[in-house]
Structures are given as structure tokens and as C-alpha cells.
Image (cartoon, rainbow, N blue to C red; front, side, top):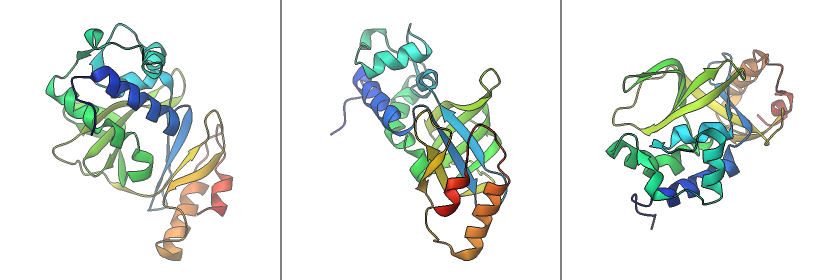
Length: 209
């Protein structure tokens, strides 16, 4: 049985561990099924707090490190969105596995009065990203479980991720193999050929698709 929502510190601690294991310091590549250019996102320590829906005196990477170490206390955690924060924390473990589950993404996505540069959905779970010009990365800004799923124009054929602190995509977390036939495989490869970001190398993926 999961922890009670009232024990926010314990829930956030568990989610921080999952974030560290699955996403921290990794680039994730969303490869569309139409052969168009894929989209890359990045997950840093400073982005984790945005996904929790809480207020706390610690900010950015300091909040994440306190969560990992189990040093957060419930008395100093404040729900930013009251009931929505409860739902967010309950669904966050699923949302943090988006790189295994997501089925569509889009640009300039409007959700619950907010606008995201990139939005990604897995069933009713949503992860919103904004471009950070200072670091030249598109990073997570919000996570939520929606009551109405937005219509996003680009279906996902595959998702890849790097190892932490690496610039090489070596793992497909979704959409590996030749499922979907030769035509879909060609669209995946076409998508990768359009990918021209200097920071990361997608070439190894061509042997995995």
C-alpha cells in the first residue's frame, strides 16, 4: 500500500529516488511516427521541485538533494494547489516513467490555463516542458494527471535516453525492434536523420531500431 498523501515528505523522497534512477542528468529523445524531427528534453536536479506541486524554502537542486537524503519535513512543505497537489503526488511515480509510456507529444500545448513549449501525454498523465535559454535545454516544468486529455498532433514511435552525463543515446525505453513493419522503421530512421543537435549523438540508435 502506498504512503498516505499527508506524508508528503515520504512520497517526495520516493519520487526523488525514482527520478534519480530513471531521468536525472539524462537527455530523452521523443521520436515521432511520421518521420518528422524528434524532440529532445533534459532532466536536471533543479527541475524536480516543479513536478511536485509544493512550496518549500529550499529551491532547485538543494530541494532535490534534501528529498533524496530524506531531509524534507512535512511541516515546511505547503501544497501549492491543495487537492491538485494531492493528485499530482499520487500520480507522480507513473508520470516519472513517461519515457516508457508516453504515446503523443506536441508543441505550444495549452493545459489548464498554462502554455508549454512541449507537452507529452501517457494516457491521462501529462508532462509539460519549457525551453531554458540559459542552459539551451528543454526541461520539465509541470506534471499532472488530467481529467481531459489534450489532443496532441505527433504520435510517438519510439523513445530513447542517454546514460547520466552522457551525450550518446544508447537505450530505447519504448518502441524498440521492428514492430510496426518496415514503413514505420523507415520513418523512425528518417526522423533521426533530421536530428541535428550537436550535443548528442543518435547514430548508435540506428542499430537498435
